[in-house]
Image 1 (cartoon, chains in turn green, purple, cyan):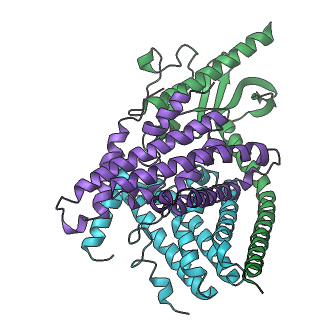
Image 2 (tube, chains in turn blue, yellow, red):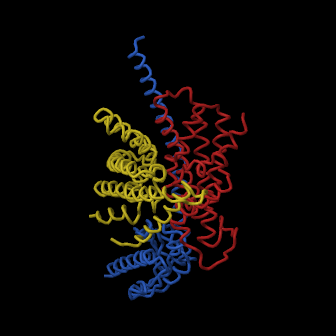
Length: 181
Length: 193
Length: 197
């Protein structure tokens, strides 16, 4: 065998092996993906359900476009929605509950990637409890003329959450006003 | 329209890839003993990072998304990066032996530089940037990497003349210098653009 | 089987402290012991299984394409564990974030594959990979314990207070990037002083 054909054999074997490995691992990944896909979707839904039931503890939820209607004994008691916004470290995903009179029922942060120990406190009860019963005008940080105290050392994270909530409330109230007309 | 300036400044200073995001630490400590090596490595990383940002964005948007196989992204991205680095090395070897001599040892290291894979994943999956924004982010992150590496190399060249307790010599002192550098970069956090 | 294949990776050749490899996750996700535990497990899974596969296949993988083959195998295993954690522990998935997929480019894994698994028997490879995994876990858990203790003023693992809160004003800087560099720098100096590494 000449030198170049030896090289060809080595090369072709390399290509075959690499392709085989790619195909096999690709196939195995497809299987893993299909096995875990439902589980991932379920876990995400479970997180949302958990947050919703913390907001309106005894209500049932009916999904409507991009928000949920909270019903208690068949009667509408408020609205809830799952929203995403930008925080300091990344996305903040939150669940917001709105009462029929346009005030906030409760806010829950579902996931975030704020700085541990500082910005992460915006997901804590101490910060989020302030939102209860607030109206649109009050939903600003205190230093900006509103009613919400920012977490010390985490003004940006706090402002991010307040902004997400205020914008969502505004959108929801606009939508309800439209529906009434 | 995305805030391109914001993305660029954010990637260079506020969220510096090495000092606040902890990516690319192996070359950061490995190649930062000499200013000249640090600059060369930084430029090579910036080049690969920019090209990889564009390539992986195209592959993700026009191949993985239409085929609904986004979950294959890790395998596909690392292959794209590794092939690109390999091709670049072959090209440089053929076209400029001088450049190959100075860059040669760094190129294979770049494939396993987590900053590159990290940026490509951030562009597509985490942030969902457009092609232009992804390119800007690739360049700016590379510039941030050069900045961190050059600052560190400058510090370490001077540290060689210092006389620290024996236990602190070498890597421990490098880590503590990096801590001070990171502390300085914390000052940028909170800037809004 | 040689037992020292297992023990050498734990302290003497500890990947993080002695060889300064795999630094990115060591610094980034060590803000809590819980994250470090999750990372250790994911890392051990990928390191052990990838190196076993590579060791078993070493005769079939041609020399010149071995690195791409290793990378494909490692990347697939990382994707698998990524999907698995996403489904079964969304909170951990959130906390590890981008550092979970980045196990692919962790130099320790490719390094062990190239330097050990591709040259040794499957049983020796298992011992080596397990030892390195224990060493890595030891490193990131000790770093995270220091950072959580000083930075949060408490250590909480899966809802249990292992160390109860002892201060209302912890040194938050330890949770921030400078604290990570500082912790490792001082740990390295202490280990060097004690002549452990």
